Amino acid sequence: MRVAIASDMLTGVAGELADALRERGHEVTTHGALADGDRVDWAWAGEAAARAVAEGTADQAIVCCWTGTGVSIAANKVPGIRAALCADATTAEGARKWNDANVLALSLRTLSRAALDEILDAWFSAAPSTDADDVENVKHLGEIR
Image (cartoon, rainbow, N blue to C red; front, side):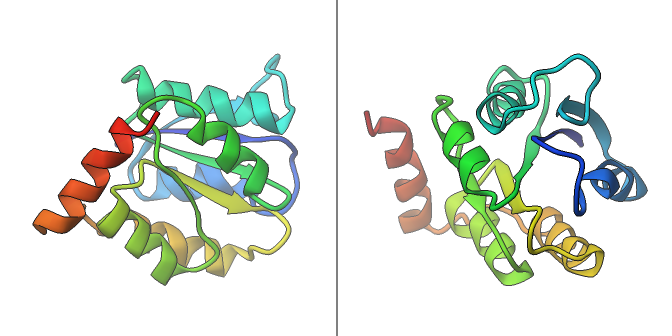
């Protein structure tokens, strides 16, 4: 899978994220502080990774900042993006299953490498629900203006 990643700083698990994804067989593109010459501010970094998903150059994205909140807000401003701030594996699995989230937002302040691995495993192993109510809710997200 093609995964765009972004961070506004090189702290916490930010430096380990690309390797963790490549170890799982994903193709990674970097943005923000993870890429030379990119603007590193959280709003720009989060937007860049989300746009990669919206424009089809990435299948999913993972965005990081100190709390994860700023990048999730920025990503969710991009049409077609459903970013979820996830602090644990259960939330990540649910975000993929019930919300068909296509951008994972993470906090650099709180995550250990072990927690990151658990979240990534849950995120990538979950599939969107085919339950009619869940499908209708996700469809409605695209209609909200």
